[in-house]
Image 1 (cartoon, rainbow, N blue to C red):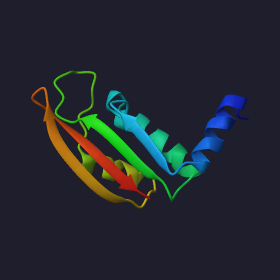
Image 2 (image 1 turned 90 degrees about the vertical axis):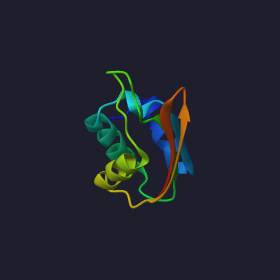
Image 3 (image 1 turned 90 degrees about the horizontal axis):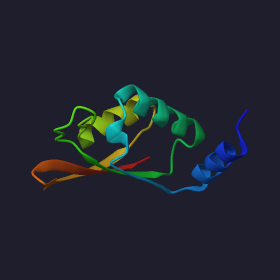
Length: 103
C-alpha cells in the first residue's frame, strides 16, 4: 500500500499537464529511468508534456549521456506514444539537449 506522501505524489501527477526534469535522469541508468517511466505511465499515459534537459556529451563516468532520440526510445519502450521536439546546444563545450515529449 502507498504511504500518504506517495499517494499525494500520485494524485498530483494525475492532475499534471507537464513534468520537468533538469539534469536528474542523466544520473540514472537506463533500467532505472525505464522503471520510473513505466510507473509514471501506469499513473497517467496521455495528456502530459515531459520536458527533459540533460547533458548528452558527458565527460564523467557517473552520468549517462542520452540524446533526445534516446529518450524517445525509452518513452516508447515504457509504453508512451510521444510527439517529440528536440533541441541541442553547447554549454562548457559539452552538448546539452532539451527534449519535449508530448503524450
